[in-house]
Each structure stands twice: as structure tokens, then as C-alpha cells.
Length: 282
Image 1: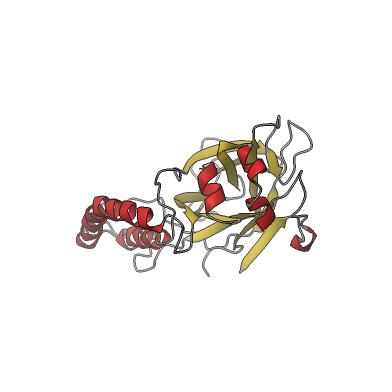
Image 2 (image 1 turned 90 degrees about the horizontal axis):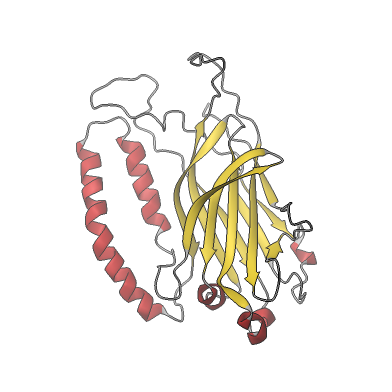
């Protein structure tokens, strides 16, 4: 089931004319994802393992964030003249101590066509396509040739990444967005995640609703105790966990960024949280 959380909790209360907090933030995705039990295994060709389900595609899930603001804010030249470059940071974190972990596969930022810079983008997309297509083709060919039980999972990943690129913003001039892996300590323990960095031109020109996403696969994570390998028959304990998200708009005349949700203490940062309960296939 796809569920959504936001700041403010009820978007009907969003104060779009506020000078202090003119933005809203949403996070949504599947709240009962399937766990891939054998995703971390790499088997040599011909090895038979009864636990590997070679005919099933790898379950991959996309978790998306949305940051929005009003048309009036979009037209406010004075405000945008004080927005730093890069303008926006978005963070999404996953827990690591709930009996499962995620493997990040692909990050995106989204757009709809046609855009203002459509012609320039198409030229750049054409260049990227020529650079990437042969490599993807070679990989796909190799996947089909290797008699490896995991080939269906690799093919699933490649197929998912290809679909995600359809509306992904290309890194053209002024739109050089990037991502990096991050980690932090929270009330839920250690969290691992992704940070998006968005340039000012991109933040402004793509309209007043910007969307990004991270595609992940879930894998079980048993904590080893007393230097002993876990028993194969040990029951998985897949506990409910929280995905955290926050955004920061960087302003030249403010000591701190405009935080969504707002941060009231420098040492404590607030987040919106999406509860998820990963499950194994019955």
C-alpha cells in the first residue's frame, strides 16, 4: 500500500504566504515491501542452492519526496536573489537496526515535458544515450548468457533503472544536481540515507513542485551475537521502522537554512517520518 506523510501534517493548513516557512514537504511509498532474502548472494555459474528463487524478479520499491511552494513565491524575484546556489538539500534516511536494510539502486529528480530548456536537454540526453546505451546493451547481453541463478535479479535492476531514467532530469548546465550517501544518529538509532543537492536554477525553473526519488531493495539483516554465525533456521525478526525525510533551502541572509519541517534547536533536526513494515513472501 502506498502511504504518504507530510509537513504540515495536514496540507490544508499549509501557509503558502508565510515568509518564515513558505514550503511544504511530502514523502510517500510502499509501507509493506517484500524483503529479498537472497539479494546479497553471488553464486558461481552452475552452483545449485535451494534457497535461491531464480525465476522471480527482485522486488524494487521507489520512495519519493515532494517539495512545494506557491506561485507567488516562484515570482518573488527578491527572495530568489537571496537563495544560495546550490539552493536545496533533501535528505531521506532508512534505519539499520530493525532486522532489515535497504540497498540503494538509483536516485532521481523528476520533470514533465515539455520544459523551458527542452531543446538543450534533448541534445544532452542524446549524448548521454549514445554513451550509456552500448554499456547497458553489453551488460544485458552478458546477463542473458551467464547461467547464474541471480541473472533475473540483475535484469530486474537494469530494467528498473532504465524506467527510472525516462523522466529523470539530465545534468545539463544549471541543472547539475547530485546525490551522496549520508548517515546520522537519531532517536531511532543509526540511520543511513541519501542527500540530494539541487542547484538554484533547477529549483526555480522546474516549477513550484519538485519531486525526487530513491529506488531500493530490502534485504534481511541479522545481527551476529557472541562471534557465532546465525543458525540457518533462525526466524527473521522484521520489525516496523521509520523512513525519515527533511529539506533545507539555503538563504544568504539567514544564519540557518529554511528547514522543512522547521528546526527549533540547532543541535536537533526535525523530520517527517513514514512508518514501514517490511515482510517476507509467504
